[in-house]
Length: 469
Image 1 (cartoon, rainbow, N blue to C red):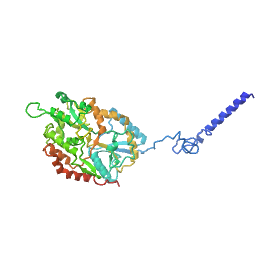
Image 2 (cartoon, rainbow, N blue to C red):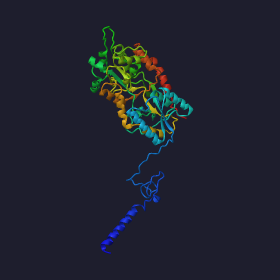
Image 3 (cartoon, helix red, strand yellow):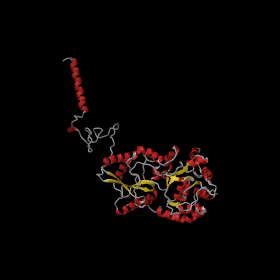
Image 4 (cartoon, one colour):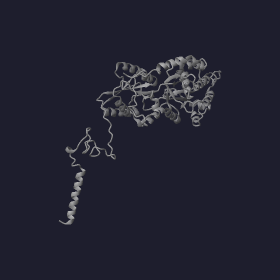
């Protein structure tokens, strides 16, 4: 044999030897090991890495989601609104996602729809029976916090990663109570601001509030100026029939207090206290009184269905402004004038706009709910996270506002939402009525009703949070 042929044979044998070493002695099914999860791992029964069982740091193992199989058991979500509706783009997409989730986790999503206000009664009754009313429950904050204090709801911080940027801004602030997370939501849908009649504004030559916001001049002074110029006797009978503002007195008073960085209650030495001495609140109450009695720019309240009357007056084009929540624009179906939406103006005690809401809705888990960790994962998979902003825009566009600036405020205002729980036993309404209807002095009213407010706060908040048995 020639030297060349010998050399080629030696090289061939070396290649075969190297290939055999790399293959681990063969790759037939009978020689291949598999881990406990059925994933094949070559020669290493420890799941990959080096032959001695240590892990190769350059090739870490892929983290696999734990398998969740509910074995056909349903996930029940208790609501009074908000289930997916077929026939719309978003509804059809949500229904399609729901079907995927049901198949993935071997479950059925059941939307249990009940009348508004019934959820808290069902939650309470179910706690007494020991059987959870549902896996997830929608509640207003004024129902949720008493339920937390009674031990009816469970903390959820161990089930969700609230540091993930997909969550709404500041969720860890408005979803928590007493240092623990109880509420969760994929998007903030509840906020309040100021609706204004753009047709009336243009007719009267009034400045657009959006321009004042851009100039950082949207404050109580410019608000008052607009209200005074808009209030008129248009038919010459000596009685105003067009008003700068119309509102339910208690709603307006609460919004004004917080727009001036005031507060009605605060924590002191670990206890919640009514704060009748708060200077920013007192300043707001006096301005509130002046709007009714000194400047006379608000349609007079008589204490009878203030809300309904104020809404109709604005719809009829007889008032320039009214406060309102994001959903209320769409309710004015008979309004022919154009309406806009803007932040409520800043008071002298505030350096930023306020957005307070007292009927803020979130999701909660009953304290006796079964499989909360698994249900949390399933709920997260139900959400179309990449469509949240689009859904917010579509909701704003449905409010019959006039232009893009109004829509942008509706979308942005949710970032500064401040949910309020104010268990004052009716003191807020008594003070507002006394000022708006009777012209009474704010300090006198606060002194009269402060014990009622504090007693209610004590009974609702200054007792230890119970734990579920």
